[in-house]
Length: 160
Image 1 (cartoon, rainbow, N blue to C red):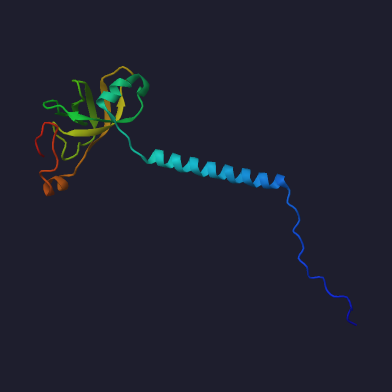
Image 2: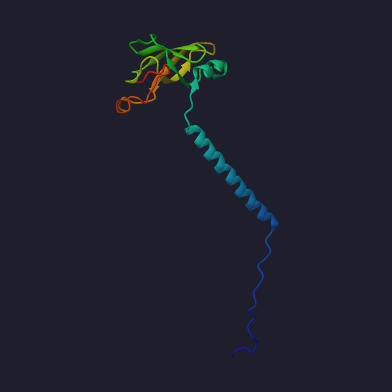
């Protein structure tokens, strides 16, 4: 037999949540956001390839020590000597600041005097003006130079 009482269909209030669990959720979300931001910033910082100019490197030589860096400067005219293991030359900065570079490996095709280059390597010591290079990088390739002969200019104003 059906019951004579009508069914109660009014909404039931949800149970009150504890504020402690709410703060815990906010804390977990905050930690996750901080972790994601830290990972992204570290990834971006490590993907950038910075270089030090001759002037910057000489000013921070004690701090840099024998750490591997990218050293940027202009190849001094008349200083290039081909060696059995690569090439040696002098990189110049401003104010007649110079660093002697002994680089191993084949220099790029465009490597020549009076052009800016970046050399990967390290100083022999914290006080040394000698740099041991493992890679020489020139800004443009030979194909680019051939296609755009007037675009690449040396510091003295000549085009390459």
